[in-house]
Image (cartoon, rainbow, N blue to C red; front, side, top):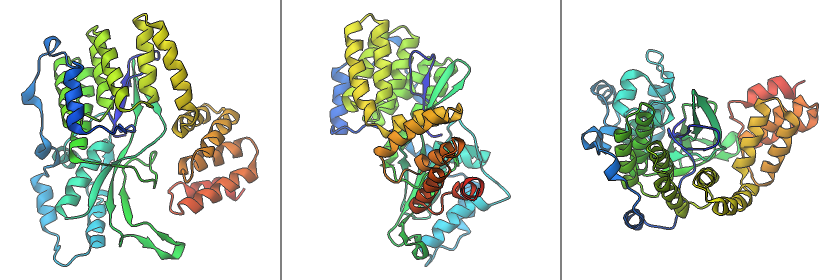
Length: 392
């Protein structure tokens, strides 16, 4: 998990605690978006107390701990190749048995904190990997990985999980000529449940800082610290004004203060940046109903149906949810629909292989395993699928 979205009830879907959803696909420039924020009066400074001293900056986010600096200094990097430095990075994060890293969701930390605590969510661990990689002079980035919507409930709060990971890019890296693959990149991912070889959207450091603020804003909001949450959300929107999940979270905060009209205006602004975000469309539709704007809500329903029809992530999400509930026939229907709109989606082949097997369609199951192997022969779940399904 890297970026989360939060909702307080099943009738109003809200994005929070970031693990990363697909972000804005707007043609606006950053300065234009900042100007539109002012023109549309998104902010409610009169209703919140800004807490500026609480904000870590970009330097704080990526700063390494002294103990880690000493460990990096021990590596003789003179004349080392990118591959050798990348291997050193992965050995620090994956194979150092003295300090194994643990995945811990719902709490985001800086690179320094993550290293010292030996744990973190996918955003925290990706920030740490990125900071180490930059110190090793690697061509490393953090990327937003597109994935189906998945809900996770904790108490009365529901989260929508997204995902980020780190990626080392170099055309001379990681060639596997025996299998015909010339990948040219290495992924560093800490959540085996979300792992995919598919490329995502490269994030700038400002984007990552905004996601960090967003997660801290969600954490603050859940703790009842609404002024602090407002501070984080506003700074996130200043750092990366095209990141639409910020406005979804801000709208949820406004609702907690009974600022429903302000919340609606904020979601409308988010949709002006990314008009096909189904979660935000549903949130706004629910809010229109709450405000008695029935005709506006009905118009949004038509729009939602059009967007969902050709959205593979929507059908993948429904398919995975059905499979979790052992409704395998329904799962197959949804996943086959997703397969019509996709190519090379490993999670579709994985889920279809299992669902076909559960319904007795054994040859179709084997065919999905073969397709998965053709897409990525090193997929970590491939061996399991072959052992449990293909050989039976």
